[in-house]
Image 1 (spheres, rainbow, N blue to C red):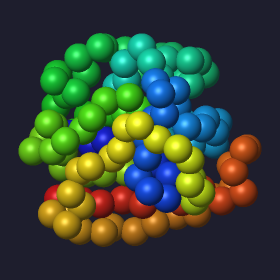
Image 2 (cartoon, helix red, strand yellow):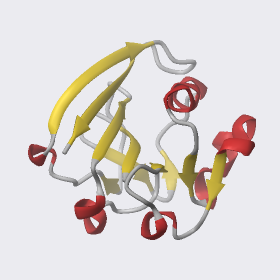
Image 3 (cartoon, one colour):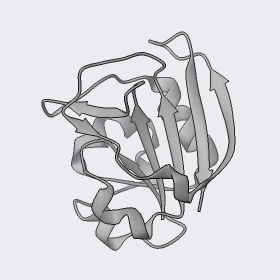
Length: 132
């Protein structure tokens, strides 16, 4: 499966069951590179404009096939590491407090490139791609 995750400079994903940040440009960027995105109900409000291209499933990581793109905000990905073939990291390029961290070991992946773009709430957002 392909996972897309937003992280801060210390790989934080979530703080006290709240997303660290939200930026419309991240969702637009992801939807420009994915035909369909799998999410859980926690992320639903971020994808309002793309309802016809989003699958909402509370067990989406368990049900994901190898090519499925899954946007993850509030789930520990370590138990799913063996299923992950590609990682798309959206870096906020700043530090926020966090209670959930991205802990997938990227040393098993090849860095495939990065793209920087300006967001609505962040001057610079970096998309990094890693392929197993």
